Image 1: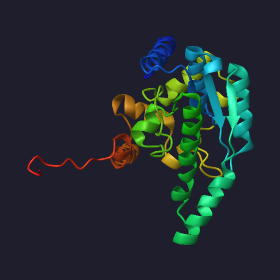
Image 2: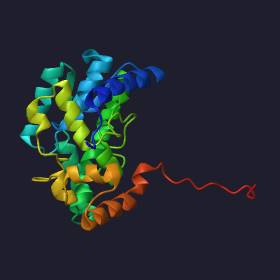
Image 3: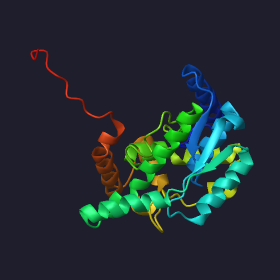
Image 4: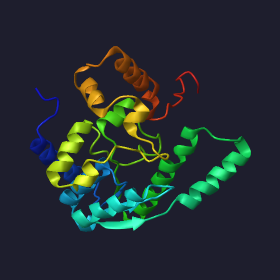
Length: 250
């Protein structure tokens, strides 16, 4: 038995869901970051199908990035005919990093890396608000549950259409809607530093994580890694804790 759901049914449901969510919010356009990876590629394709290419904006936001990111992002835009903007964040990132280093000393690799998705979030909201569009995120279920995303970065969006899709379902759907093969087969990476890949950083494959999220099956070592990450990242999936004032304080 496959752990993955029927691709045609998923496709039809998501098109309907996206259309409904935009209608409920009275908004007819979307903006998303296009990274050259399969998740944002699938999201772009679904948004174009649901809203139209003229109501979908893909934003390239290089920041010490691989040239492949831009090449694949433009390949995607050519395929689905949506408008693109390019906002190079390299100089802004370097300026912030230089100030922080001057004040704090050398930053850890993760502290440096997470500046990038938070700059991208700011960029997307500026463009979204300028056009009156919703900001859409491409985080999938594996990333959301495991906590493999940047708080107030990748998660800083208005809508997450892919967040209940396992990685294998993302790949199957992307293939189904005609995302270029190069993007579908590209090694998953958040592009946070040179040579970084999702699976290398997690220490196991997306297929293994898919299986755990489906029925809880994994080796003891992998299960411990996953459950520890889920526990530690719980705060990322919650609204900030509010200090509720007791009724006796008047």
